[in-house]
Image (cartoon, rainbow, N blue to C red; front, top):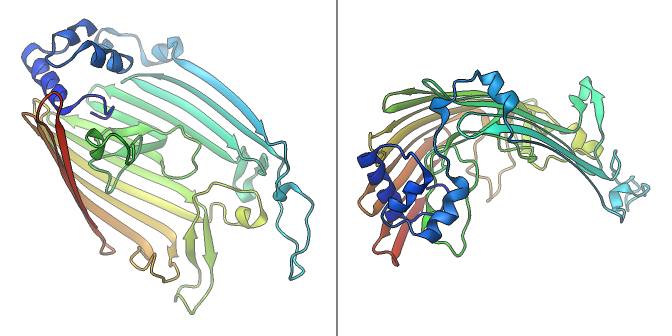
Amino acid sequence: MALYILNLEQVNNFLDYRTENGQLLSIYELQAIPGFDVFTIRKILPFVAIDEMRSDTRPLLQRIIEEKNNFLLVRMERTVEKSKGFQPADTNSRGDLSPRYSGNRNKVYSRFRISRSKDFSIGVTMEKDAGERINFNNKVKSYGPDFLSYHLVLENQRKWKSLAIGDYQIQLGQGLILGAGFNPGKGSETITTIRRSSTGIRPYSSILESGFFRGGAATYSMGSFDIMEFYSHQFVDAGTQNDTTISDFDEFVSSIQATGFHRTDTELNNKDQVREQVIGTNVTYRSGNGNWSMGLTFVNTRYDVPIIKRPNNYNQFEFQGNSNYSTGLFSNFLWQNLNFFGEAAISKSGGTGAIGGIIASLSNQIAISLVLRNS
């Protein structure tokens, strides 16, 4: 369902076929599923593989070494025209020197990844933006490229559904508390894209320097229940202030910066200024036929420096302080050609939100969707 290719009727037909006949033994069985025409099968074939993990008894290390699905990508970009940040410094109207970039114009990007679907994924990503420096300096927490990301994710290790070390993301429910991965916005497809799928723990390999966890996560399967625990510890970019007219704290964070740029003195001074720790858990129940699931999520976030944003109409309801937690309940139910889904969440700071919807396949040519949001 996360591919947004199959309609609701086709998903239900697939689940019914698997319940009656067991796991598929060949991709050619897709032709026997009602509603799977040749056009649909050709669209989903790049994403379909028959599970051969049970017959692969090789040790994990051997599977990693012999895996052919691996690549190394190295890329360098350089803009011919010089932007103002690379030109000699000049004075502004107040007589101050305008900020200039500390690094060269080269943008360097490198990624290595080796992975096998539903088994393992190992990756390292490095990036230096134009204007940044490749620097080895422990005082400013710089160890080579400006951004370094890494992950090791194992899946389906007996009762352990997934294990992650390093950088990862989590997608559960409709994304009110934990949302990550591919999710198309408003566009020509108005039916299948209104709901999100719970894909669980996912390896992170993007060059975006925010929006991910760094630490460890695991999902343990106990029959119909999946229990997930995760912990993240990292430093985030932030602008700090000392202003007693706004806050009683000696030091506080006025803004969290997610651009990932560290080119000027100001951007470098804001780098890794706040320690962020996130701990959370999720318990999800799934029925035997896969038609119904329900999950409960709890996430606690703590900063070593309090966050106090300047009050205005835009952020007057945002969280303030050192810690906050959120709790949410989500569910997804398939019945005949109807799909009901929803999630509701509440936070310690007083924020509430809810989303609910329905997707219905009235025929092979007609489908309707309805979604309601409140926050």
